[in-house]
Length: 299
Image (cartoon, rainbow, N blue to C red; front, top):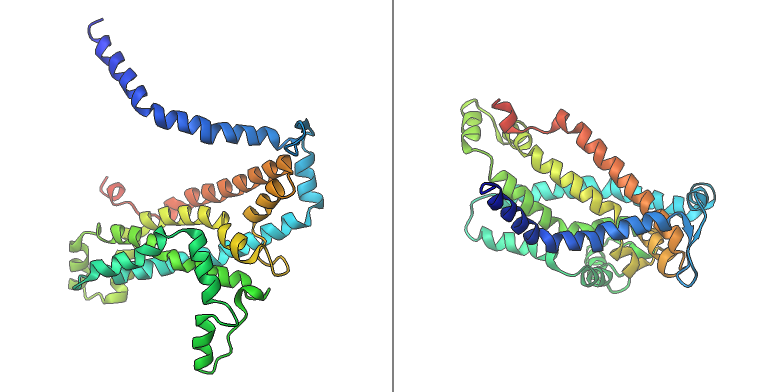
């Protein structure tokens, strides 16, 4: 009995310690998730009582909703283009920032700063930079004789403009890569140099394999982020021109808060959640083929 009392007291203290997080999770995460799962099977327009319609929302989505397929097409196109670019540019920037040069800390801070800026402020800044009439980018291109595109105002370039804009935040992922780079044991590079390895050989045979756990983490997190792009399309293009930037999250937002079809929007949210879950599961499933953990190699 004397042995159990400290254990029980310790357990109670532990539960009290995690109670703020637990209450927040139940109220702001799990509760809304379960509510949206229920509302996805109803016809609910906020001002009316939810009416159970079974699978009607999902049947309508896959058989008669052209905007749903357009939003999927735009979002998948963005993920396919932006995700590899973010991974490659983030890694390249981290390799540059990993050099031990005077003042390198200042450069690391400068490249990280865009990550902490508000998404709305960044969107407004890029609206100005890429404005086809008075934007800085087109002014520079015009000075060297290159006619600038219409960026966000052309259906052919609007989506690519958002991809380009989001590279602005690549400094955040570069800092995470940098932490991974600095955990690579120096003796691996010394051994590679003794074998006559050059820069590219060391990058391919030492740096990339040792960095695969970080690449794995970044792939999952940036994929989840890419599937949920919203701010740029909402602030700058509003889904246009000609629905070329109608991202899934923007379509879901319009359905919920412009058309007040909350039941249908809940169904849309769950479809996106399942898509992200499948993608993440595939990445996890493939990880034993390409992710190298040094601790496992020592067993």
